[in-house]
Length: 124
Image (cartoon, rainbow, N blue to C red; front, top):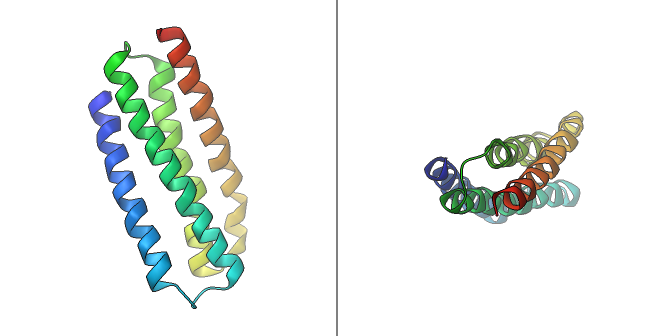
């Protein structure tokens, strides 16, 4: 589990840098201010939860594998895909109905953090 989440976290963080750079350099002046802000919010949460995935991997090196720790990692990944992904697509296409998906990703982030603290408290 540690190797999986460290690998996924590294890939997710690399993608966050690429997506962030594309937004800063390739989209400047091409999106409305609101859509650029949505895009930047997606990148911010993408990066924060990529670090969360890396944390899950590091913690997995120290603690016995648990369903809570495993669930935390998958929740972060699902949150990135739904929350950040919906904001990226919405900003690039203007399809604002995709905003309905964003809170589901936010809920996945919250679940991930709750599961992470649960795993740590039980594992220590």
